[in-house]
Image (cartoon, rainbow, N blue to C red):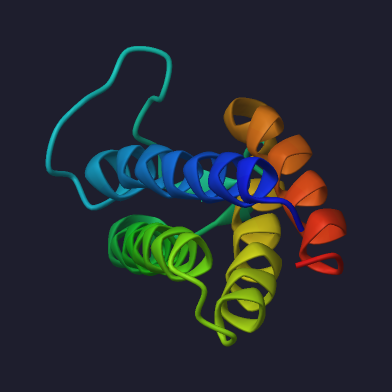
Length: 121
């Protein structure tokens, strides 16, 4: 992969990780963000997590945030294990964004793009 593509991919992956912090922030009940309401259910209300379940859901958003940021930095600095970390983080991210698709639909698209690109890293 060219240097420009590697740097671009690293930045996109890292930024996607930072967006995941918003999910943690809201679902762990640390604060509010307009357009990302706190709720205790996912799948447009079809699956109830209750308060403790949403905190766990928020922690998973934080774990994926850390995975994407570390993966992006590792990719940019040439670490061979970066692609594996990015792949697995994207899979987990795709699951949680799919569960919350009513507000995280753009994340689903980004995750699919990252998953496809990860096979070329």
